[in-house]
Image 1 (cartoon, rainbow, N blue to C red):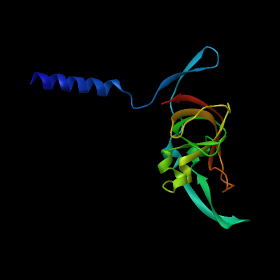
Image 2 (image 1 turned 45 degrees about the vertical axis):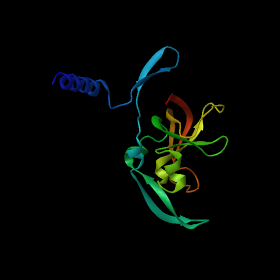
Image 3 (image 1 turned 90 degrees about the horizontal axis):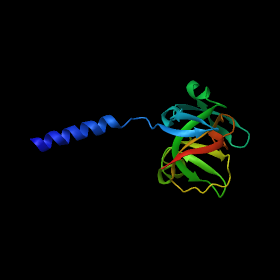
Image 4 (image 1 turned 180 degrees about the horizontal axis):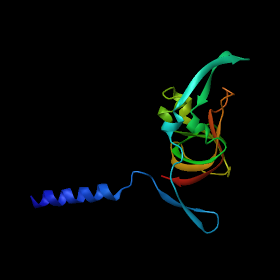
Amino acid sequence: MGKRLIFMILISFSLVSFNSKDLFLKKIGHNEKTILNDTITWKKLGLVKFVKMKHKDYGTANYPVASPEVKLLHNKKVVISGFLIPINNEDFALSKTVFSSCFFCGKEGPETVVGLKFKDKKLKLRVDQYVTITGVFKINEKDPDDWMYQMEKVVILKTN
């Protein structure tokens, strides 16, 4: 009975001590410290509809229409976490899932990736590296040949 009670107490403390939000400190600017967590989630990015419209090269194409909540973040600085996917030697995307399950393998939709333009071009990054990043969020609802969601001036805040 004593071992069982000690086990239950340890489990209770461990459940209480972990926060469901991934909060962390990141030094911003010179001396200012800020607590950051994701300001946009993959669930919110998934709230997208597609409208079939005429396209000069394809005849018709599916164009995304982002949710009003996501549209409010256009041209705003956001924080999001996900898996890095290399596109070529210079370009990367952030994915909701690992490379083997990502959009490019046909298992997810285009709303599960964000095209990235890093502020620092000389980063050493790994495939499927889980990161938290910040940057200026852009929505593309006009060009079906480009990323639906993009981020510019991207900086990595945290890696796992």
